[in-house]
Length: 252
Image (cartoon, rainbow, N blue to C red; front, side, top):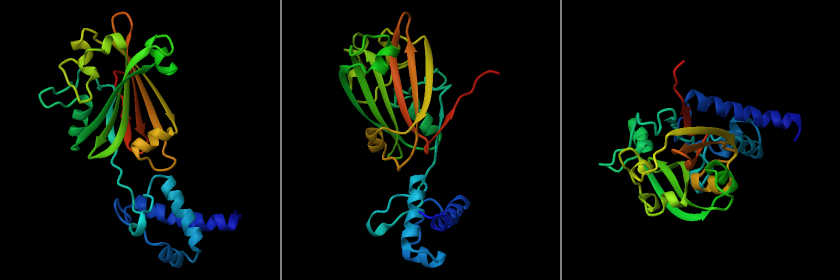
């Protein structure tokens, strides 16, 4: 692609990006069609496609579907307070069946939901290392697709040593809430937590489950829970970068 042609699509991209940033093209607004944009900017439709494709890759507009065209994406980030999450400052609400994550969502005026799948399978090496288990030792895997206002927002997968989870509510494919947490109620309280955060591009299955726009990075938050004498849980949460603000508060 020549420099002059690149400049043309960049000019269109910059104009549309400015309108989105300023709000003249707001969330849910439809982008003008290719013909209209080509005429407005005095360029070809292929140049328009290049500019709009870049907006899609940046997660600013949706991918076109039939006659509906492309619209500006609605993105309202979740403020995820990780220093308070699971620390007793916001516990589960067993009476309503809402866990600490769901309560945090509700506090922001939104509606949480989740689907859950439970299985017993060999521990991946990443998980085995953090649970201090032999590679491929059987573990209980509890996989959740968490939604906000019916939109996939987060993947949360917890692995537990089989002897800890078997026969407990952790095996049930539903939202389970208990005062103090399921592990504590089952006799394996978490005494301390360790967080690891990395930022990367999503795996294909993650992109599919979260319905991610092209080129959307994710934060991988790994939390290891330690009991009296060993790790009792490894939880890996996948949080799309366009939908989350990760917050930590601590004493200075």
